[in-house]
Image (tube, rainbow, N blue to C red; front, side, top):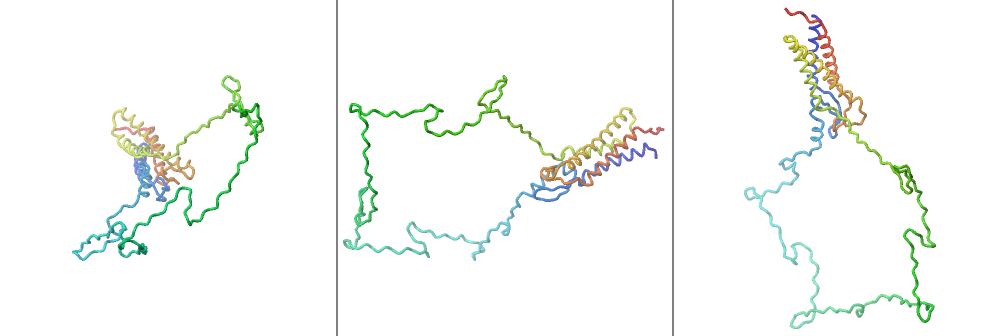
Length: 317
């Protein structure tokens, strides 16, 4: 077998292997609420980690059985197996339920005409007075006001006393003042200093997006594997030089695309720190054998295609 035919055969096999490895375990990781999981390239592209986490956090479905609902079964009655509703006894306001303890009744008031008791009048007292027979609290001591000394008279008239006032920001005589805070002078745009202005630089906050594994771009792996297989397989039946030239270009580009896509997953996991959120949600711990096999297959297929397109083609009869 010549080099041309051998390299084309290797390229076809490498493209098929890369497409099949896309559905094998690529990444091992930990999903919250689930534990250790293994995800294929197809699972990563579909965002399977988020689906697994949602299913684990969802409450269990309720069933109509008596053991799941937790309700105690109602006792069956003798009337045809149907349970009749039980009437709850009600009582009028002021009445007493059956079986309850009642307070002893007050003795009836004596006296009355014809066995009738007359209403008893409750004595009332004026505010501040004391009921007869009640004990009174000792009175508060009486304070005797001391007359103020007479003010000096000026012709028999008392002069008003002036209350001292102070301007805003000034200090009253005899009061203690707090130590003044040091003033930092800030430089203005004109180059002069403005006393009393404190220049505080504002912090610059940069938002850093957390690293995640690629998702939709992983569909390029089966596309590249299938494209290499198809273009390399039908290359022998192409007769137009333009079609043969574009077939060579497309197979090389698809091989490079498969190398870049599969290596991006391996490189992202190797460059990430632990703990991480590469699975979103979940931590990716290590790439598995399928990711490495896919990368090696695309490298071998691309090299084989390069050798096949540069080798001398056999003459067609």
